[in-house]
Image: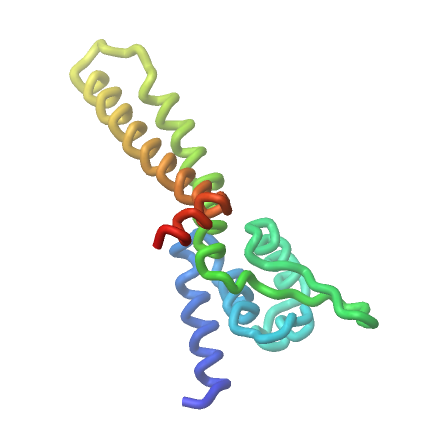
Length: 167
């Protein structure tokens, strides 16, 4: 397998995995292409490499920037915009965890809190429903708190420095 084949295989595989962490295939392919590129890439190069339209490229690049995992870069003397991906894998994982919490876990918690706080104890089924949804709410809330703590720790430079000095 040569470099071009390997790069294409990586981009295609990363694209397929994208749905596992909450983004569409094209968005994940753009991210993969930028992540393994050694220099910032123009939208035109992204469109050509992935065989996608300008609108598709633009919409997905904007979404990746909203996630905080792709950045716009400017080159002196160039009118075109260039893009690069977050290369630090710890930072990438932290940003993805934050976004997934914001987009998926927090809305689910809101619904779980709402449905588990009904005051219907008129039947065994209703009591069971309230009991189970309260347990589920508590479990998801603990998981979300863990994600928050891990991402806060990642951002706390003083804590990281102390841990590094102790290690």
